[in-house]
Length: 125
Image 1: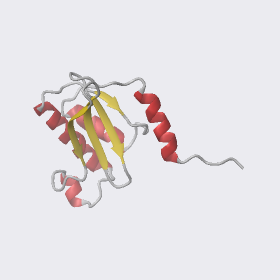
Image 2 (image 1 turned 90 degrees about the vertical axis):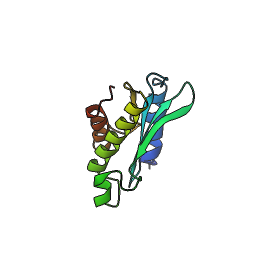
Image 3 (image 1 turned 90 degrees about the horizontal axis):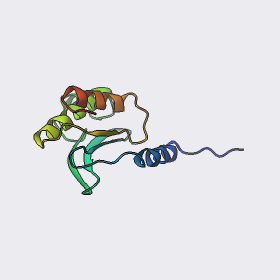
Image 4 (image 1 turned 180 degrees about the vertical axis):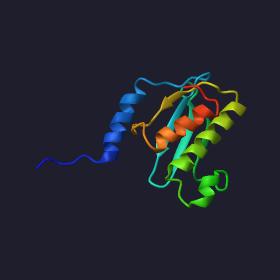
């Protein structure tokens, strides 16, 4: 019998492989996405300085209108709101271009919705 590998272990392995190629800088930080069962988190990271420039997530109460309607942030509508919020905060800090790090997740569903919303709000990938 072949042992099954946990989905999260596979995701972490894929994420490590992606991170070998992606690096965020001061002028072009890395947009990192983390997706839990109930929420979604995104942050812009300057890997050279080792610090987070801007962050946004679905747990911020009342900020995301869709999040106010539904208790969890585990849907596409809330992911779009988080993407817009992140892009607005990035623009306020003077960041216009980013490198997208999907975190080992498939570019589909909530991850894609967040990325598309950030693009529409003015971030360039």
